[in-house]
Structures are given as C-alpha cells and as structure tokens.
Length: 288
Image (cartoon, rainbow, N blue to C red; front, side):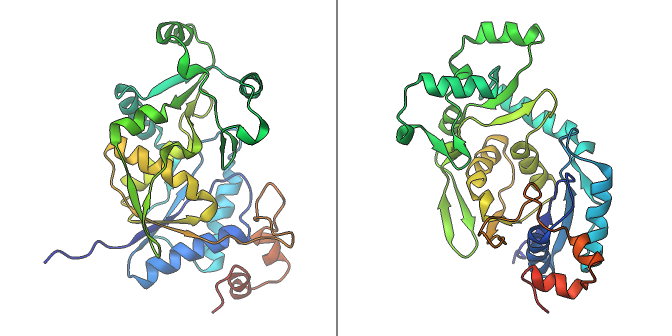
C-alpha cells in the first residue's frame, strides 16, 4: 500500500520591505496546515529583483517570523542563489518555440492599445489591467533575432496561445473546491525574463515549488489568476503538480488589501509598540 505524500507547504516573501499582518496571516496559514499534518514547512526568499531587494529586509523577515513563533524545515532557499535553475527552464521553453523577444516599453504598449481602437469596455483585460496586445509576437522572427543580437534591450514573453496548443486542456485541484479548469490566457503573454531581472515571479516560483517538493501551495486569493499560468508552465516543463489553497486577504479599514506599497503597519512596529507574539498572531487571524 502506497503511503500518502507528506504535506509540504512554503512561505515565500520578497525582501523589499518589512513584513506586515497580511504576511503574518499567509505565513501562519501555511505553517499551521503543515504542522497539523505532520508535514514540512519551508521558507523561501524571493529576491530575484536586485534593484528592490535588500539584505536588511531579508534579515528582518527571519527575525520577525521567529519572533512570531514560526519555525521552518531545512535551509532557506534564496532565489538569487539559483538563477541557473531558472535559466535552464527558460532555455527549455525556448526550445519548445513558445518564447519571443519583446522590445515594447510601457508607453509603446499603451499607444498600441489606443491605436487598436478598442472601446474602453472592449479592451482585452486581465486581473491587472489591459492585456499585452501581442505587438512583438507578430514581428518577423529573423528581424527580431537581429535586434537581440545587436544588444537591443528586450524582455522575453511567453506565447500563451502557442503554449496552450502544445499542452491541451489543463486542470488543478483546489482544496475545498475541487477541480478547477485552467484558463492559461487570463494574464496574456506574460514576461518571463528581462535584462535586469533574469527570471520573473511566474517562472521562478513554478520552478522552485517543483525543486523543493512542495505538495500544497498556500497563498492569497489575489494570486489565484496566476495559478492558471503556473499550471501551464508546469505542463510545458514537465514539473510536478501540487494542490493549491488560496486563502482570504486581510484588509484595511477601506477594505483594501494590506500591502507594503500602501504603508501597512509592519510587524516590527507592532512589536516595538509592546504587542506580544500571541497578540499579533490574533490580529493576523490566528488566535490561540
């Protein structure tokens, strides 16, 4: 009789600022599931963006999680130490013929959308705004290759339609909801790499979850749209397929998701104000 796979969850913050209550909720959510199942809880530092990630924030992440009473199994995986893994995945996608160079700036994309003449309510939209209109996907490949060879700055995009034609229909298992049918085009032709950031979040997180043996991805429901794309990347790259569980989000008084960008109160500020770990865990939605 084959034993059920051991539950492996992970928490993967980016060291671009201090952790806040939303991070605490996400970390505690995965940690509690793993510990109650007798499984493993992993910590990953997503520091692929050298312009925004800082070592002092990474040190603060480790300190804040330990102060909250969270522990993790094995060494911390730091993405910047594993860029070769993402380069290998990108190379494999290139050999499948599902990548193309994109020379468009944000301004170029906005102008292309405007030139297309869509009425505002007919503009192809994704969860994060208008979808990339495919300008560079339609370029002559020989001309595009010459521009790349000449050193012209560019990003690498995924041709989602071509990729989905290779994989065929895909699904994933959402705990508590059952089987979900993937819609790989929900985010459009996403960027998988840039000159300054050699692997996108979408590529690196998909590769990491496979290499670390994650069996259950727990993350906020704001990332549910990304799961459609990640399922496509898994199929293209022949990676293991975990289950997912997208949890609710903590919000401020205006009903907006807590975020670093909007100045959500940092855990260390709560600590300095005299809050105990138990009080902060309760504020994060996990009372004793």
